[in-house]
Length: 115
Ligand SMILES: [Zn+2]
Image (cartoon, rainbow, N blue to C red; front, side, top):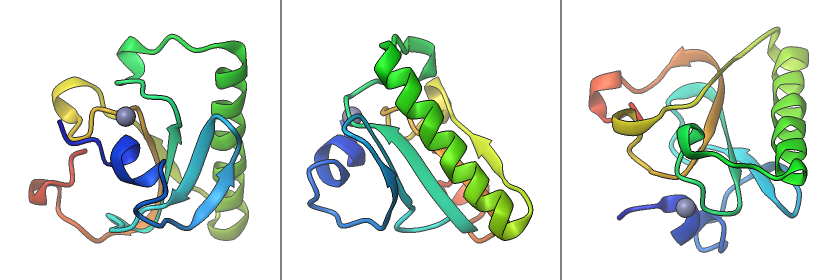
């Protein structure tokens, strides 16, 4: 099954521009953004989605820290943002990820942007 995060991004095969990182989580600019400004937040361990999420305190802390840092950055720079995560049939990539985004949508939903 295709998992771009475990297969390419976390091992560093596909280079990304990191916004925030700890030992457990990464936040980076989407390589093919759907919105004018589009950051992805992921745990570095494989977790399928929020519905199957069982986090340690350390992972919970790091994920929320990443969300806080990135959303604050968007708020400070652009005035606000939206954060979203898909589950189940809405997920193209079965690795938990959040999108933090702002600005105009660049890719139509029906072009495979539902991820
Ligand atoms: Zn994965």
